[in-house]
Length: 282
Figure 1 (cartoon, rainbow, N blue to C red):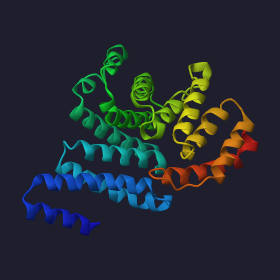
Figure 2: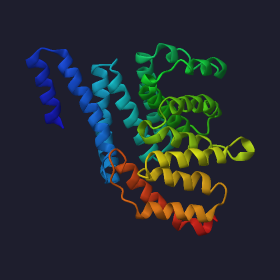
Figure 3: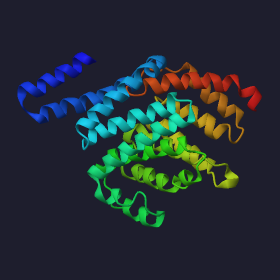
Figure 4: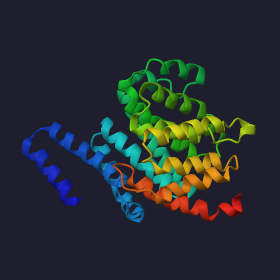
């Protein structure tokens, strides 16, 4: 990794062209994110990601207005916080940084959304109609980082109060480009719909629709979509047969798939844990 950085530095010096350096480091930032997502050994990712986070920080500090680097940082920090960090306060710090990077990226690219994300819902919602399909990558990245931040701050009712805005944002992604990232927006919407029990406003049947659509759009390759379907929906409604069927499908499926390998590997681990605890739960 040090050799890569030194090589990039030499390129920048010898060409005298800042755009070459910027492009190369942006590619590196994106490649780091993809390398983590394509890794089939979660422990390697757990041990190695902190070094990547420091590297991303350095790249962003060098070019603080680079949208691609900010988005790569938001993805890495958010994924690491939600997947590997068990300490609540540490997870909150990392999720805060993920959301900060995502907000900065939004403000680089979309002044309208930048000016309203912290406003009341009745001001925020109408602006979403102005978004176009070209805005989907930045809006999805922002929405997913925001959702991760809420997850890390689930005990904070001020954070929970953001759920309607996050939901509206991701619903707009679905309206504009439903199959973006193989339907991951549906996956987030399914989880958001089950953050609260039905008695407090949770919407399990709406969640079911989103989970099933996420599975369909990924052509069954997203094993985490199936695990979340079982955990968030089947367990909530005590549907044991559905729960076991879905999780057994995960256990027999292949984990390797572009940008889903790490999530699928973790999904298989979680599926086994859920099945092992099913008798006690049901």
